[in-house]
Image 1 (tube, rainbow, N blue to C red):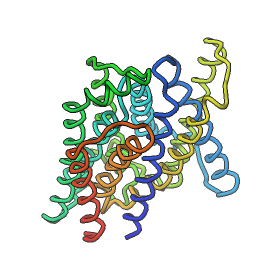
Image 2 (cartoon, rainbow, N blue to C red):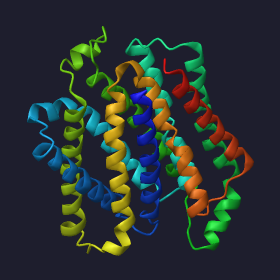
Image 3 (tube, rainbow, N blue to C red):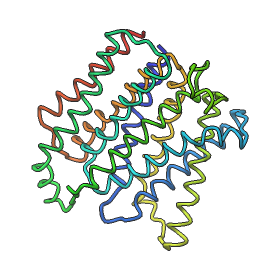
Amino acid sequence: MQWFLLSLIAFFFWSGSDFFSKLGSRPDDKLSHWKMVIAVGLVMGLHALWEVTVGGVQITFSEILVYLPASALYIGSMILGYIGLRYIELSISSPICNCSGAVAAILCFVFLHEVPGPISLVAVALIGVGLVCLGIVERREGEEARALRQAEGIRYSRSAIALILPLLYCLLDALGTFIDAVILRDEDTGTFLDLLFPTPLAEETANVCYELTFLFMGILAAVYVFVIRKERPRVPREAPKLFGAVCETAGQLAYVYALGDTEHAGFSAAIISAYCAMSVLLSRLFLKEKLSLWHYLSILLAFAGIIILGVIDP
């Protein structure tokens, strides 16, 4: 059951990351997404430094290169997600983005030779249906909530880009999750993937590789924001971004170890993807984004899938 507990830890921390990232993303700040990259890169870089100096994790440049495909997909998807938060409500964006877990679960089932039972498949389906329903309900019933938020001076776009960005996040993140499971595998998959990724990595090594890559992106973003664009840092205004970065780092740590259990990698991906259900609840409580009965029913479907996976432990 360790994989299930780690998945839940990632679930809760990443819902917090969603919430604080949204708080720190203002529609009028065109550099908001790069500032979020700076915050995440800073926190992840500090954790990577601790892992290397205190935790004793050995890291080489070649290992960073081995993990680079997964790192690039994750970071690219996150940047797109941060941009999208300026254009669309969290309660719409998060469910669309996190359909990636269901896609990644299917990829793991097909290519990593996982053999789930019928009840487990039903559980994954419940999570996927719940997430898709959240996106559909928000899209169809969001006009009233949109009008209320506009009354408070916050305007969101209903243009194509507002939906394209979270959809691109979904695709990139699903591929990253799948490649992550391959790189962290305990044994060969028996497919062409063994030729593409011949050297499995340990969970702690992979996590440090990812954090160092994010640190590098954070440095590049800082140069762009503070040197090229000459933006002045304002700590009180950017505080939510730092809280989001801490939650993102903690969730990532739990996520890597959960996915390291290759036998349950698909189930872990499905559970963690449902953290958007908690994000929707937080957006209702603190961001005053309106929920209907259909919202709650969609969330209930996702939570039901989580409970079934946790009880069965295939």
